[in-house]
Image (cartoon, rainbow, N blue to C red; front, side, top):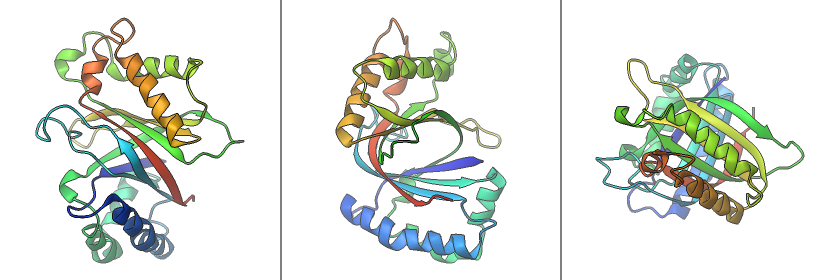
Length: 241
């Protein structure tokens, strides 16, 4: 199973609240209709994550994909990249779903990543809907002398999770970004944490930033992450599969 993560910004002139209403009450029913009509090609699971707050990167949009604020992460699961792409070619998507995207999404801001999920931890006794997404962009070639950035970042995350100051995390998924055909992904990892509330997510974000800022434990990672993004979101699991 692979997952497609779609990260985007609301259409110009639209409030975040209006975008969230459209996504939940207009677009999501179309997706569920698509799943019912085309179970073989349609997503095997489907979730929307609506941002409550988010950081943005240093610089301009020309310098970083994450210099603009984003408003949502849509997640769809498929058995393979080919299956995910096949669904996008169907008339239902082209005639109903794709035109509706224009009603709430600024398409020029959309970033799509195929990822492989790695379940790091899951407490099945607790259900949480608040999330923290933490995006680590790929490092420039010149910045690889200290070892693979993704693994360094994972080590920082492990230290923070073990810190007594860290709020309780009910689930943690490490999304390892797959390279597109014939190219290199602009992002290495997207860490995904489930927490009890938005305040807990904000505390976790502060601790992760503190860990990345330490040159003793994470040399060079702070500069890399300053080109990335973090967001606090509320999950809507609309089709759990």
